[in-house]
Length: 280
Picture 1: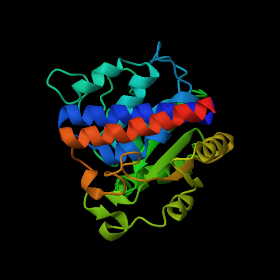
Picture 2 (picture 1 turned 60 degrees about the vertical axis):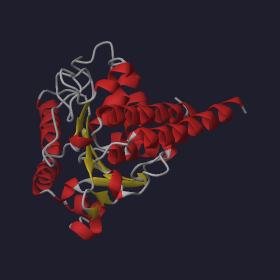
Picture 3 (picture 1 turned 180 degrees about the vertical axis):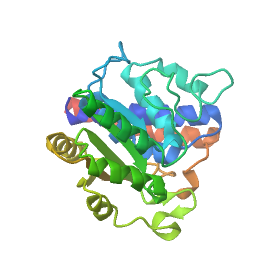
Picture 4 (picture 1 turned 90 degrees about the vertical axis):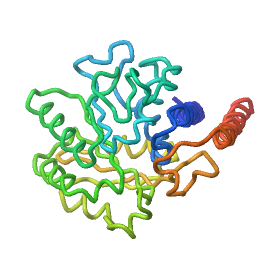
């Protein structure tokens, strides 16, 4: 898939995020938007998955360790064909299967998550299970940069590095903001790359919003043998929505009707520019 097609899919994912959170009147748009390009690359190009057969045994696995950004995962799954895009409007509604954190009964979701720090442990377990069973699937886990202040993350990293889980790829969404403010002012996890290297990870830094860099990073991760990989993706919280970008205020609140209209206008403008680029 070429970069323009990926950019269009990512823009649709962002529209779904904003629509879902606005409809729910609650949720976490900032970190969902910052990871939208990563989600898009994983589900539209990188991972071995099949929306028509979401539980196939040889599929690649994905764990959303920062589970509160479920709107990003849900929108990606919907746009990839795992369930109807229209269902995004039921986010957090009574009786909806799309609740505030991912649940394993949702088509395409491999792990119920939400309690920060735990997802990477589950992902390491999946990767170890694949090794023990001589399976060739890969496991991807997306963590928040604030989340890696959790001690359990480093216990899992120690295990994964020691067990040489080269079928595990950890992605850290480094948007530099958590709910209380900049991560380096709350409880700095920097330098992120050096910490993972100390736990015997192969580490790659890249731009979270550049598909050439994402492609190169994931290809390098796939080719790395004898150790797990950590890709630190440097992102912009709230990416794509003018008033949400790099604003901690949009970590965990929903836009009102007026703000929703502005957000969708921003994304429609991006979509129009992408269409124009495709015609050139």
